[in-house]
Length: 112
Image 1 (cartoon, rainbow, N blue to C red):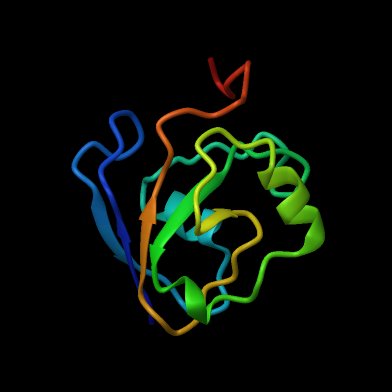
Image 2 (tube, rainbow, N blue to C red):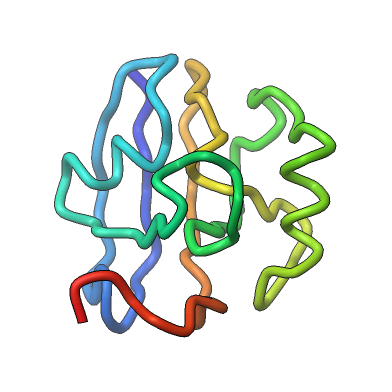
């Protein structure tokens, strides 16, 4: 199982986290299962950018982003090399280092 290192994020994961998840799992689901409650306002349908993450290490083993994902990422806050939508990333067998951007473009957060 790949190991996911989540870099510290002030609200979602202040101390960072190291978790494992099975290859093939959605990154968004793996994060939620381990208490990192990344937003996903479109219910993982690749229709927004609230689950934007930056894959800092290990991204070469992932399937490339689709055109639809790339188009949406153009609207994401803090776009960087390695930017992906966690709802579209199926984990490979390689370990990943993930950064959650400080902000999201979601004007109305779920549950608030």
